[in-house]
Image (cartoon, rainbow, N blue to C red; front, side, top):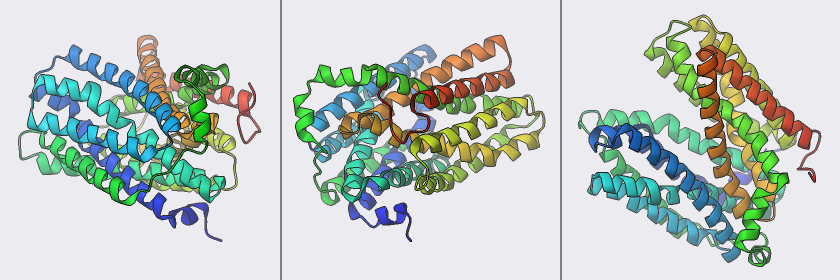
Length: 403
């Protein structure tokens, strides 16, 4: 019998949404690895201003994602808002390329591109309504496929863009490519995605903005956001300490970093789809708990690694666990506010921000009291704390409890 993923991919709306998310991933993957080079080296921003700008942009993205999610539920038309935020991407990336100044970079990074970033939860909200039409059991598999499409962009695009532009002496053309990717996405969404109303548009209209924000701040949601953020923070700590452990404790070099990261990224794409299939038989809670346990073990073993081959041996474990932590929380977070697809999907952006913040805090604490290996071990404890909280709240249940 065909898997949920194969059934879902026969839906033309979901197939088109996947192409849209690939183009979204393309724009980010084409520019994010080179953003600091453009901002600091080419346009002359100071390190302090750039750091403050990136932090402020993350806050703006969270605020806009939540606000746009609320608006989407109220107006009942995700497609119109998707078109609007895609145009922000066209303008933001295009402005940096056409007017390469500090001001254009700051305005794009602080306003236009955070607004474009809201396309991610909007697309997941749109796809969620399509999956509901097909039967809710397909939602996890569809989310896995969509998330794998983003990862695939990050596997292929940064290296290709770097290779193409290496002879130009400037990375600014990456912003032109990103703007053209957004423009192609605008045409795709305009011509191929039909308008799709929220699951319960009347509910969205009955609740005020303050009441909608109140749902996110309720104890039931906040505790679960904390659990997922603690779990997700392990991904951010791994990204920070892995290169340092490779070139330090285990005696590797920068070449090993590229190979290891590339292997893990490629395997993640495959394993994300595997986890989508696993969720045909496991609840989101149990699947996420299993994936978290695997990644916690990976972080602990990373901290204990003493030879280069240890890191290479961990790539399979790391990719399998990371694939779960990247994909499964999407469906879990959406179901925290299941009757509000826009607001529920905006929790994806909230979790990215919280997970990144906790990861930065753990890195700062770990490197203060220990070394990079000790920081990895500290991160594994944070993952255990997040898993314990998740199981306390929702253990043995297929959906969130009343607390």
